[in-house]
Length: 614
Ligand SMILES: Cc1cc2nc3c(=O)[nH]c(=O)nc-3n(C[C@H](O)[C@H](O)[C@H](O)COP(=O)(O)OP(=O)(O)OC[C@H]3O[C@@H](n4cnc5c(N)ncnc54)[C@H](O)[C@@H]3O)c2cc1C
Image (cartoon, rainbow, N blue to C red):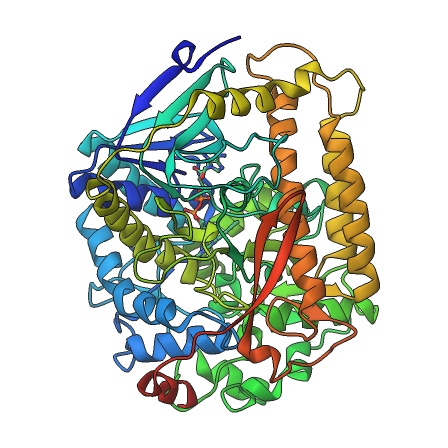
């Protein structure tokens, strides 16, 4: 039997899992604070999901509207999240985002400019002022390019196409990719166990501090804007290591994904289309969003088309168009129009910018959208409307962390970016993710480095831990049941799409949990053919238990929360409840399943609470 010494091994102070915006920013900070730092990522450097981000980075720099400041950004973020956000995260985020954007610029990011030469800021849903710093509609590409160049120039080690399957403790057991699902972790973090995707060989990272920056979970739904990487690995690694997840019932369905042709269904149509003047219409040509303005946002939303149109050039004397309500509101409205049968030819609604802006303007401000529709759907968005519908986009829930340090309940385990929870409450505003990555990525790197330096005796993973992780990773090769990883994945996506989607009900969630349990039993029996060299069937077999564990967390938390709020809509509990407004649902893994607890929501101090009433 192989022992740890047979595997490739590396020693670091801080290992960052993930090379998106959060991971790269964390690694830069940890390195600059003197920690020996490595980044480990599933895909090639530069290919993390962040590269797909389009519209921009939210930061109250006040370049377009001098009235903007962190207090207004804080208020917008909390109201967008329907007050379930951790107030301290929302405060830090709003205060620090402008500095992080300017720092990106110092490191070489080339943002679009205002006529005065400042960084340009564009409108997005739920933000009172034009606030998103952007590079056309390719902001994520510029962000990744800049951070990646800095990581390379600082000489930080990057292990790419290397997938982590287990976190290792010094005092407890290593949890395998599949076998020890739900195992309770114990003790401090001692490192991580991974495999090279190309060779299938194992790697052991020994490190007292690990930062999870693994992104989201969208690949468990059938219609999603998310890339192949979004299998919830970090959420599942954290659960198995003994950390808690918060707000998992809140999954964001972005209102505008492509609906046609079927091969591209779910691909994102950026909110910048609406921010730059695009409007939503149903089959009768009505601008239907005026029929869906909730009381909560009525005071700040235009009542007539004329007022809404004037807002684009005069925000001081007019209110925001209803197309720019927070995403949860717009997605539900589209869902209702579709249910009522007022659909576009392929079952969505129309998003029209062609009749409202010049072709030149559209091509300049939305170059990716122009090409995306031209290439994928043969639609010229400068001449005709797009067809759009909701798509699973973002998970607000994630690892419960201390807002200032990003540390989880497990000593040595930190989390930042989409894998972390609390910041966005029940609904994220567009643009607030990219700023979240920078603000909390930096904080996670800083605190992981200080933890590693002050840890005293270095924790070390035991032989038995590593052997357990290796055995679990190889198990699919020893099974001959013929159970197929792709079939199980497809069925999982159908269950989540049909039963844990945009509108939920108790009986459907209960059915989903039953079906998830069946799928989990089948996933344990999945068999893989061939060998370990670049074997996508094996890679998926190792991702499946993560998707199943995280899907269970979402379904259980969704069943628990008996109200509708933000990204969680219950048909059987249609309104928000004042009781649930004070409660967070928290998930831990015990034995084979996810256990829930209700926790009181942290209450903001009075000086911040006052801002929320403004
Ligand atoms: C099309 C699209 C457009 C968007 N536009 C915007 C926008 O304009 N503004 C905005 O604020 N937000 C936007 N978002 C959301 C935003 O892009 C994401 O929330 C954000 O990029 C997540 O960054 P991250 O650093 O947390 O993770 P990612 O960028 O997803 O990085 C995750 C990293 O973890 C690695 N990883 C995962 N699992 C493992 C494992 N087991 N082992 C090793 N490595 C692993 C991956 O390889 C990857 O490197 C958009 C999202 C989409 C899909």
